[in-house]
Structures are given as structure tokens and as C-alpha cells.
Length: 265
Ligand SMILES: [Zn+2]
Image (cartoon, rainbow, N blue to C red; front, side):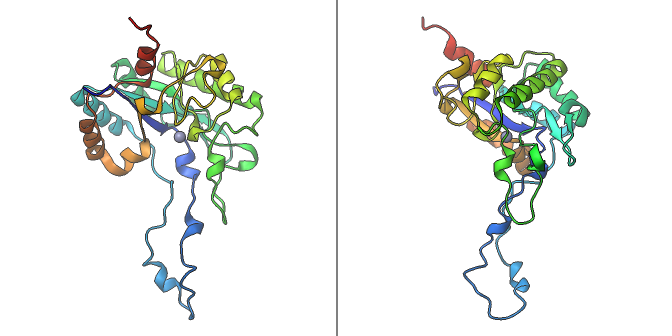
């Protein structure tokens, strides 16, 4: 039997799904230098313009369907929630207030033991100078990562602490798994995460700084990471296919990390 893996779904509550828009400037029209006016006529024959956002937030009905799928597959899921939704004017609304119905349903999933809530940052993006907003002439992907090394370490602390407060008070559980938005973090981020009570870090190459800050990195090959965007686009058929393809049924990141911590017998 293959080793059990964790299934992790990222970006719930992250406003990057609204503002992270990129790729539009990379459409390859250059090679065909059109010698006549009316290029626009050809544009509609180009492949679809690839973008990350916008796409919608998962609603209460989606969560009901996800929980039914998990129960059917005897699976569990880590949901990495970005605790604050960034409004267009830069104000931050806690996820449980912004999407009250969905958040309530997600809490039901926690109470049923189907879901672990992980910390996926406070904003997922850089708030300074409205860097998160879409631009006219360039992509903004870089600004949709929250914990760059050029962000002061106090900000790392503040964001992780706020996210922990929102998530733990609403979901009523200890949140111990940190999922750095966009795989970007520094040693200072890990110190801040530890100070906020987080114990495990899960993302691609989570062990790049060893176990700095005392956080335990979870191995890449022990986690299957997906995004809420995959479920929005692929629907439940996609998720059910995925669950069928993972044997034995997946568990949470926390459970994987705890198993690895158990002393060898
Ligand atoms: Zn993310």
C-alpha cells in the first residue's frame, strides 16, 4: 500500500481571486506583424487569454457537496483560509464576516471532523500603495504574495497574529498549520508563525530554511495541493475523480505532520 498523503485546498477567502490578473500582456500577436488595419478581427481567433482571476468564492452549497464527497471517499481535507478579504479600497474584512454563510458551513465541516483549518495569511497580498489592484499595462502576480523579504518583519508578525485571531475565534479550534501564500516566506515569517502558535509549515519546498523558528516543514511528496479555483472550474466531478485517484484516502496536513513527529517504535 502506498503511503497516505494529505489533501490541501488553498485560497479560500483570498481576494487574490478577484485582483490577481496577469498574462493579458503576453498574448502573442507580435510574430504576425499585420500589414493592414483590422488586426482586431484576428484577435478573436487567438487562444483564450490565460489569467488566474477573477473567479468566485466557494459558497455554502459547494461546501455541502465537498463534505459529501469527503465522506463518500472516507477522506479528510486541510482548507487553507486567508483570514481577511481585501476590499478594493484596501480595507480588510474578516472571512467569516465577508462570506458568513460559507464560513458557517465550513465550520460545520470542522465540527464533523472532516476539515482542518490552516492559516493561509491575512491578506495573501501586499497592501502598500494598493499594489494588489490590477494594472493597466503589467501583471501583478508578485504583489499577490504576502510575506516577501522586503516587507518589514513586524508586518509578518502582525498579519499572522491577526489571521490566527480571526480563524481560531471563529472556527473554535487551534490552528497549527501555516501555508505561506504563493510559497513565499522568510525566516522572519517562520519566527512570526511560531510566535502566533503555528507549528507546521506546508507549501512547496517548505523545508528551505530547515526548521527555523521551530516550525516543522511538511514534505512536498506527503501533500497533494489544490486550489479553490480547481473546484470552481472543474466542479464536483473533478473533485470526485481526484478523490478516487488517491489511495489510501487522504488525511489532513496536521495528521501527516503529527505522524512524522511520533517517535519511531
Ligand atoms: Zn494561495
